[in-house]
Image (cartoon, rainbow, N blue to C red; front, side, top):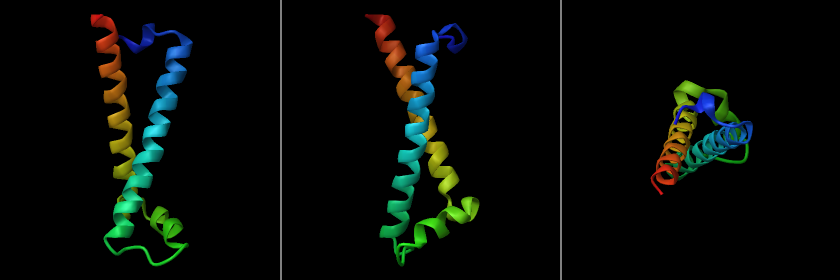
Length: 82
C-alpha cells in the first residue's frame, strides 16, 4: 500500500485519477452553484473561478481529489485481498 513502492505506471495512473477527480469536482461544484441561482450567463463560470475561496471551487476540487484517493485506496485493498 506504500505509494513509494508503486511502479511508475501505477503512479502515473494515480496522478491522472486525482486530476480527473479534481476536474469532476469543480464541474459538479459549478453545476450546484448554477442550479442554486448563482449563474447568470456564459461568463459566470470564469467569474466563479476568479474567487476560489469565496465561491468555493477550491473546496470542490479538494473534495474531488479526496474521493479519487479513496477510490484508489479501495481498489488497491480489493485487489490485494483477492
